[in-house]
Length: 242
Image 1 (cartoon, rainbow, N blue to C red):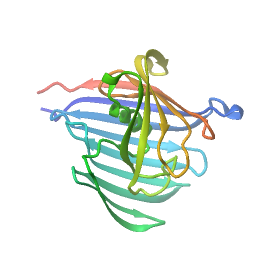
Image 2: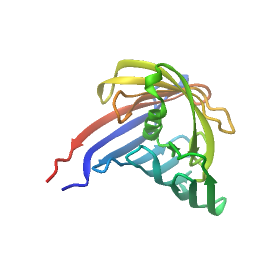
Image 3: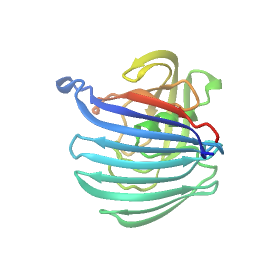
């Protein structure tokens, strides 16, 4: 019997909203989410940002059956050169990071936690969508704030990887049907209003599937970034028990 009950795979197109290059391709992302039979989930993503200095990112995140992050691996290259790789582990008491970077060298971090960590930001766009599951939908539309850790405080995730704490403010707007390259979906619309990074992050709107997977369908970032993201392919495979 396969240990995986369901697999969700897809690709996300990165484009520009800048007036002089509206709709131009600026990167891409491929992902795979495996839902294991014990209820845990493993998300793997390969991300490429073409805008100089180009960023290539590979991530692998595991959350347990209670949707709590347990471990993550992040590797980044910047400008065509290896920048760093790191392993992160989380329990109810602390977060750990063991990484090697070309700037900081060998890094070991321990970050004490008051409560189990509920989300870890690794800068994959598909993971940004899944982080919207933090929001308590029973409270209806509104704003909620959450503590989380990131692998980098850089808006493009192009530093580290190392632990960085933030307070994430999420606004829930509501549900609607939207059509993207991958098809038509029932979507939940969220907006990230503040991330608590050293440099203020522009408003970030995300539309995710209205199910338990929160698959990223579409996203836009305003301000100086002027970027857009859209689900361009999508497949769900159910793995029947043998």
